Image 1 (cartoon, rainbow, N blue to C red):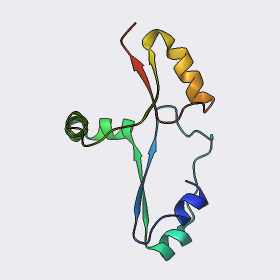
Image 2: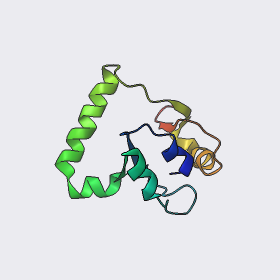
Image 3: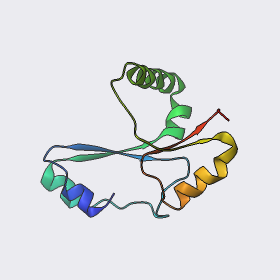
Length: 111
């Protein structure tokens, strides 16, 4: 989380920080300036999906089911920046590592 990202938050806002399977993109664990959180009365919430799935598997499955239903119902529309067939997984990882994609990188089971 950058200083600019926190400074741009509205008063009383909440922001979710989620780590991905590949970890922190910059290699460093972010440091949060607590003074900005206090002045803006805002909060940051951290989420590590892997730990959540292990600690509360039932809640994890239920929340995943709810998100899947929201997607199926058209209530959310994640931005897909790159979709590649599974056989091109190395290219997908290279796009992530090289920061060449905006949005989600998706591997499909299609040829």
